[in-house]
Length: 512
Image (cartoon, rainbow, N blue to C red; front, side, top):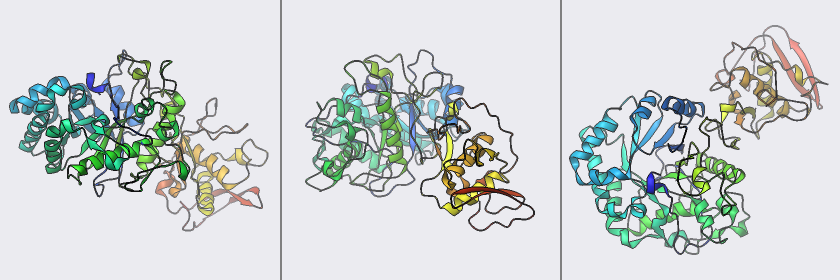
């Protein structure tokens, strides 16, 4: 959020327990694309990294969607030719001028959008931030500002490529549990109705900021912490909407569905929704005991998994709700409580505040700036495919699999999952954790949890001194068959055996 618009005033009037999460682009009926995770980039740091450093961090984390709180020229230039999808923002202090003058809006678009397209992949413009709740005197010109910005995009033939919307605090939703009876604060209907008409007519989406942390803090213990953090709940602990009989297991889903129901109350049923901000602080003062690293890690890790799995909400199951995490960096210059300065995933040096638990969620936000990512066997993978991948890694993949031999540090546990995990991780680090080097025909996945155990230290593990000889073989994700001399590791009655096969080996269909 920007200025007052970033104070996240998330009080829910008449708020009763149980509601939380869900981020990503959700459409009213179907999603145009798979759900994605984006990140907000605030700049209230005493030692703000330069734009080139910011973009390097984004690339290392494979972050493909970002939201800026302005349209900083240097940042937009640094983002050029990266393919990263960018949401730029009209700050609140520029809203009145743009909302009162079509020419001012056109100049803003020319200077901050047209000057950077197409090299910089600008895909959305957020006009203002939580205007109705933080800058109510600008509310009468909010819709005009959106229309003027959109008109400038139409004139440049960019209206289908760049969407225009405005982010709202979830506190504009009243009576938000059960979600089916939620409605927008009626004092804002003269703004909300034309705003929703604009979003519908331009095929844009509602931008909503969802902060279960504040809902939890302001509930006076009515909302259990587990509901706010996406922790698994037994069926008898789920919140049930008596009107729809839908079951809610977290705050996030309930807030998102409350927004859908509030729009339908005004007869808008096909407007998608994007969660533009959501997160959890990693540090707080004495009055914020639940602003901890563990809780921040749990919330953001579960949120990312929830989004990327296209879980959807009880009202719209399976429909993607793309979400932007608040935020990339801790902002030490932000005013307010200790927690206000500690929402970031990284510090100003690009070091992770905590290592997200993202097993099975791919490489996005894997925090690999510390080399603390690992390639492991995927849960439930077919043992024959694991064996084939293990053989490839220890053969053509040129991994040193000698630590797996009997009596060596990594020989136990003596099973194909454990041994494949070691070989996968060794190849992954041997290939400098390059894209596509942790795939192995779908039986491998990246994790931030160190799989080392006892005296068996995995490649990339803290304290490991081994170095790897760079291999020249292709990443195994590109191989469906292979031939050549192999060193095979296979299992019979629990025993690990090593044998050298000389000559041509024709691999079966299960091989990489």
